[in-house]
Amino acid sequence: MNILLIEDDAHIRSGLVQLLREEGFHVDAFDNGEEGLYHASEWEYDLIILDVMLPELNGWEITKQLRAQQKRIPILMLTALSEIDDVVTGLNLGADDFMTKPYNERELLARVRSLARRGQGNPSDEIQLGRVILNTRKQAVSADEVEISLTATEYRIVEHLALRAGQVVPHSQLLDLVTGELDEPDSNVIDVHIYRIRRKLGKNFLQNKRGLGYIIPKP
Image 1 (cartoon, rainbow, N blue to C red):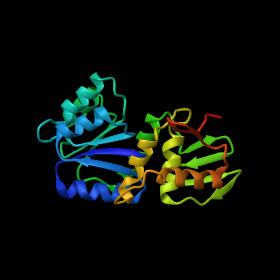
Image 2: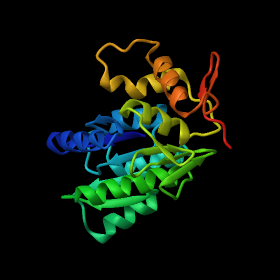
Image 3: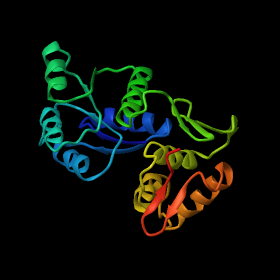
Image 4: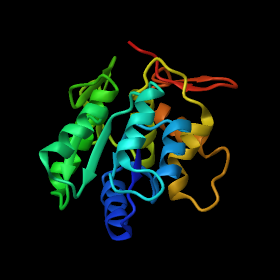
């Protein structure tokens, strides 16, 4: 799951990045509004965690511009502003949820997972793809009711594809998903992971669309 974090407080930003990555999320983090808006507009994310009081461009304006672009990516506003008028402003501009600082880590993670599932049209923790079931809360995968052991990277790739079942995901997008773990990523690293995933979950679980990318067909 890809998360864009836009937060200018270095201490809060580093803490959130660590928390989210420990939970298996891929996180891109930026400390100013203009750079954050650029990445939100040009890259594909499952969720944006957005501060309001940002340099160069505030969170209200980022939300307004993204909704004007017809970007429906879920937005969780995380801010020190706590007045009811601030909450109403954020929600009216198109934010999906609003949390105030300081935040509870368990609550934040629960809201992150809920919003990301909602954005992908999956209100449940479980995604069923034929004989394979993913539980996004437990980060567990089973096939034919037998739990399958995946590495963290394999799970991340499977979840990313499962949330986009029926869509071809470019090789470059999957490479970006795992490069946070590698200093010098090899261009065929995704092919190696895909090979191992297919050995564990079945060769028909996902397909390689030559020259385009990978897809998990919808059942």
